[in-house]
Image (tube, rainbow, N blue to C red):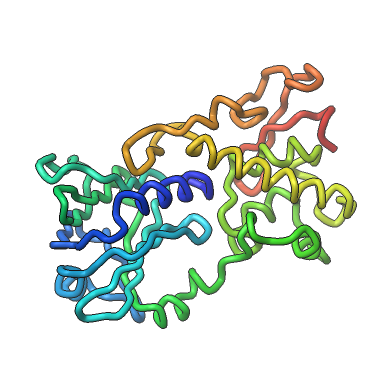
Length: 280
């Protein structure tokens, strides 16, 4: 699943491509690609609301990507996407036929279209005005942003927590946007075992974890994210941060710091790779 750096990279690319463009039409090509719910527009309402609207901005919250539009019928609408396991948002020339896995097609001005493709069909689009987004339980329950939270506030998050450190990092209610890749990488840099009880990690090491997490995320954003299988940016290009992984996916290989063989175990249902010597 794309994590914070991948979604940030896609948002950055889409902002450059789409800001100021008009939407000519909205075409739902796959039933179920639009999530319904309280306050969200139905597919029929979206088809009526989007034509003639102007794209004003693109932003990210956790692992969700949102496009802000000004519609003739609404002063502001949020067109939000959760890409889940295999979703992609790419800009393509108008004359290019939709890929077989394209689920939604936004026809735009200036000879380009926005395609939402998703082979596994786990991802979705949700369109809503700001007041509906504020009431959306998923959005309202997201934790702080890792790149915005201060060191002191980050440390305070762990007060009274009994879970394993990595389990907390993966909990989107605890901290929004971090997934398996970047949890493993930042824990390695901070010298903390993924299965270490949060209650046993000293404040000094939690502060080191805050720094390592932000460092890893910023490096990954600079590298346009990590491409393991499905992820591509807004132009269809792969990321490059996978070339700098220190532990993720490297079980059985020597630690780059001490040459100890990297080990793995399951934490929060996810495979976690770590160095038993460098991490404690």
